Length: 352
Image (tube, rainbow, N blue to C red; front, side, top):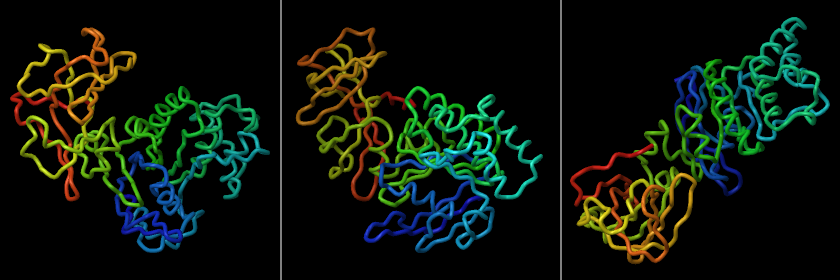
């Protein structure tokens, strides 16, 4: 492993921001550090960078213990959420800053900055100041400045948080393509799961200072290991009495359940292919989602949601419907697992 973290602990007063966190990352991987606000993501990132000192635990970069290595000597590039650009410096000077501190020659600095200007698509903006740039352009300057000293590890703290939605989506694709081209090991913090799924090779989900799960986006989506991951990844709702549903009576009687819209079919009578496995319910609400309808249905005291094609006959609030639940993610205090409906004979594939 290129980066190894072992039993990392960090507390602030009575708050534990990192609770015995351990993981390893292979060289050249792009990792999304994902979780809710206050979950400990940025604290982990800052400890890797040397900007926070862990209470205990070890950090290894390329086999070397770096706990006592100053931040400026760890070979790490860091992009802050606010970009932290120098307002009185031009784009060129901002990118050159780290190289100037290293006392590189003017020729080296000019060659490296020119290379990064080209890489980040900032041609023609070299003499502008940060207040003359768009949010996306400022983000690219911060990225170029972090890369200028040729770090071995790149850390990005909420890199797209200050950018509007349209530009943010464009920059996701740009960031992934650029990092793949450079081949630098990268960790980026985000609370946006769509961002993590789209950009990252692997995702690490952090909550309450603990690492809940690490894996590829597909692995985490299909096989959540904890109740938190099951509820956090993907669109979902919670069922408190899954054992009352057809096909799930004998599965973990004391469990709760997470259910996703793609696990459910909601249809008028005659539309469901296996009606004996379906529940009877009624439509609570209908929402237009552009390419489909989102149907919320009530089954007894429990509510579920599913998507319905625009090609099918529209449903409306109050309609009596059949609800076929193909699978659930069941969990209790000890385990979390996906369970298929026992009354069905044809398993439904998971759509990612």
